[in-house]
Image 1 (tube, rainbow, N blue to C red):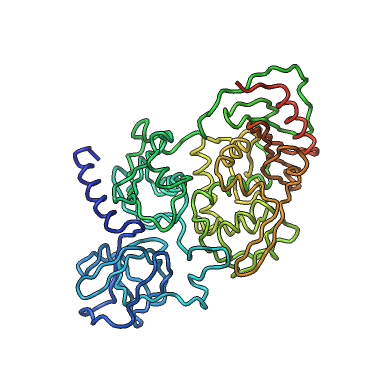
Image 2: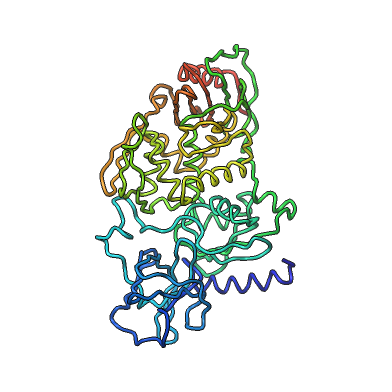
Length: 494
């Protein structure tokens, strides 16, 4: 899109965003046929984020692009279907109109034809620690596939998660915009340093965007130069310090692992490498990537209904889910990272992306963004099979990236967690390296017969964190201790 056409488009989109901030979709609807009936007692104000059920007297409800009978019809919502109420509200043509989101679209409906979902039905009910109703994860609404701007609703997460979801829809993300408390637009430039995005990070501390949130997304043409390329492929966090210098003469330790690596977190420098790029089965170290995608692509407080039955996974490490269980994303992440729940991995993937296959696609979108080319996954948990492989290098870089996400860093050091959803589940961290090594603060263990014993370990001394990854390591904990002791003793940080 040429600049002369882009600026009016931004102005128009900004005006629309101001109307629906802080949470918005773009559609609306009225029951089929006839003139609007008078307003009646069925109309009741809904809270943004609340789940509502379509009650159109057996007919379908028109979801419109804007409030009012003249708004273009996006689709017709069937009797009994559910929508998420958003913040937008208006009165026009004898109707009170409400902004809503579905899993695929967002728009406007006549509020008299939707009612709050009864808690007893399980639809929209919060479960224990879940603090928001079942907000759909990801993007509600369309995105441009070339130059253009789209008004959409984001189901919670970070700008990086939004970028990955948009890339899968054919968008080359350039920037995203939200309204601040004063109504002014605040932007985030993909691929730019934090100093450029300071206002965005002040609006969304920690980078987490609450759900549901109306946003403006600007996309560029595929292959549109350096800006476009940097928006979809951003090789890991930039170094925040100089690489440590080898000062000691201690002999490099021998290790049992088939592949091993030691990486300095601040600089990303590799201090030890044994077949670091050899592609091997990583087992449950896969879950580091799954956790990143879930943290970046979902609201932590969102309630998730499980379709997974841990009883169908005999001999597998599980959180203990049953079909119909309701737990928050935060609970499921603890179930993923502490007891290494394969059931939690499936539940998170299905919530974030809609299916097991779609979540694997999202994993690869994230891996491609971070420039990790040694890795290809076929599932979210690491039970694996032909084609499921990574390298010590890629796992170390994933761990380095993940530990800079505050929620992840806190979770992997948690020794026990009680998930208080539709049931109460108490989980303990199976990573015994945390208690075994002084300063250990992460990250994940793994084991399958194919992979052998695997470990991603991190430890911090005097504010300096190192990452060790070991693949197919019969003596993984001893290997990790030797490598960490050697690295801390033989390197100096400027």
